Amino acid sequence: MKLKILQFLHLIIFLAGITIVVILHIKTTNFWDFLRLPKLIVDLDPFFGSGWPASLHVYQAILVFAMIVALINGLGTFFYRRKIWRMLSDLLSFLGVLIIWPASLFLLYTLASAENLDSQNIQTIVIYFGLTLFIAALDLVTWFVDEKSFIKRTRMH
Image (tube, rainbow, N blue to C red; front, top):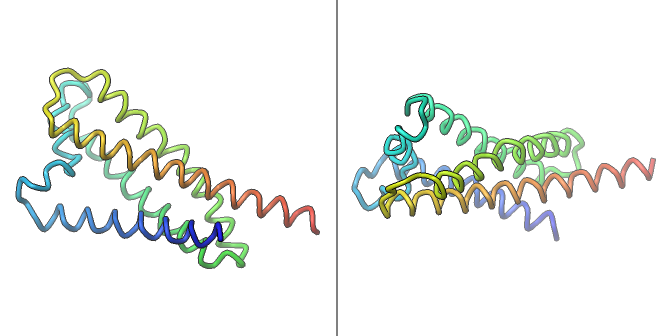
């Protein structure tokens, strides 16, 4: 049952991520601006101190990494009986927690410390904080399930 829930959640995360990226590239209306993290990065340029192009590259790298983690973890739960998929899922879940959790904390820090945020930027931060926190927690649960499986299999042999 745990695997079915994890399969569903990883599939939802992957499809939601792809859908958001596609929508934001197809629709340029202001209605979708609350989902535009690059706009937030440009608006917070003075706060970063390193310039928004570098920050945008970090954001894109974390986004691609999160999508790869969701895809591999999803496949890992579908093909759970194969050791290679369990190992990949285990490794990427652990790395996902290590990389996505700090991104979540950074968003929370930005919300708490940046001055003069408009309501749209606050909405963007809250949405992406919630998403990154959920993804980090999902990776942690997936890693725990994978590790529990490895420990159980090691004791049996």
